[in-house]
Length: 104
Image (cartoon, rainbow, N blue to C red; front, side):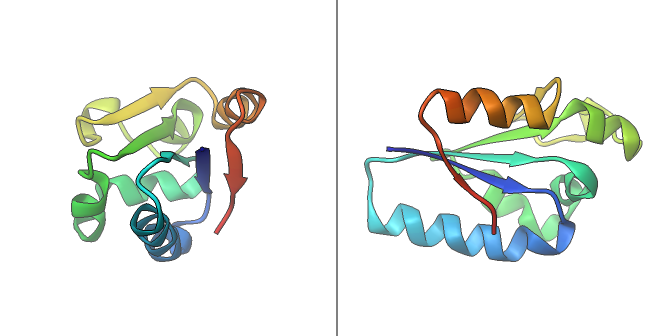
């Protein structure tokens, strides 16, 4: 199974974190990607989410356009966050590759 969690509102980070944690506890055979775009990309800089972001069982993506719009340099992101050219395009590609879409 494969799933992408989409966070585009900063206030959705806690709910997404809880959803991902619960999913990973329920099954070990799942690939999880968290795609963050819009104003929510600022959450990558929040100390409260660093432990979650460092989880090696989760792949994190950040939208380049959202980073630019929020004046965040790629170098400011945690090392394991992959920058994608456009968050919406990333979602389309992931869904066409069989990822279930979850928006907390």
